[in-house]
Length: 433
Image 1 (cartoon, helix red, strand yellow):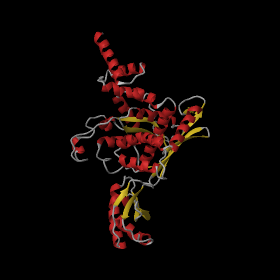
Image 2: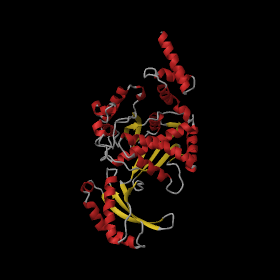
Image 3: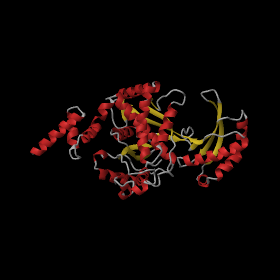
Image 4: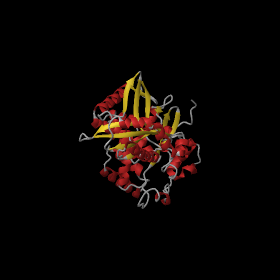
């Protein structure tokens, strides 16, 4: 496969904000003016914001940065990330560099099948509902597809229906029909909800039984991404190479997260640090993705780690399987100026490609966090970036922050008192000079 432009942007973190934006524009092959909404306080104009939600009074800003070095399926990406936690973007870039050898992270994804649920609080006896679903399949497909011509034209639509028999906490039987709907490049909530409503009326007429809820499920078990990343092992650390002892400690930490839900939830939160940051930048429903990820982590009845790292054949190998319902059309992807600019940089052709990139980010984020924990400890890894926030909280002006941070780190302290002391010393020195 032909490689695209390289996402290796050495010393990217040393550039000014304007220089970084220019470098990202050059990578994406667009004019820097097309990315202007990312640097503008009016990246989301009030007139657009007012129509996106209710009772709007303004806009709430978060930092947006770009992670470098990511390679997925032999293609390089510079990844937009919206997050206030200071170490995440730097950690992402570092781990992506470790994982970029060869074709980088290998990602595969399923077809974009979402589930619509039609609920029967007092279901007809088995196998009445099962038989009706089978005999009316063609009629159901024709009726549901008829009202969604744009989805059908894109290659999506109703695929099949399945019956699930359940028992509630009081021992009362209930049933649900799962509608499997291919939503193509949409997240799919609107289409699935509409089809579930339409199917509910049909099932009531066919069964004579009352239908309860008709709604999509945010657990897209049939819309998943699998990612695998490898880091070569050697006797000395180098780009794309990790020492054996460090890999062994990462595997040890991974096994801990696989076995213990208390550790697993923190490990999975670290994965979502990276994933959510990209979802925010690209206008996705991050709440739905979060809910699905944690439900999937506990799907077999025991909460466990989503990503797992093991030493195999001279490599540290990480694997993760995760449900991801994302969209490249609809929602705010076509109206939010900053979101549109982020898509220009990512240059993803379809929702499946976006999901593969997002899952790769999650895997790399997990590697970075696990490595930090298993080696120097998470606090020391956070120290420099955390110190900047403390310095600003204590009143340091932008031009004073670097001095205050350097003084705090030299004293091996990142508390507010250390920041105030360093700031006062700097101002006294500067005033006397």
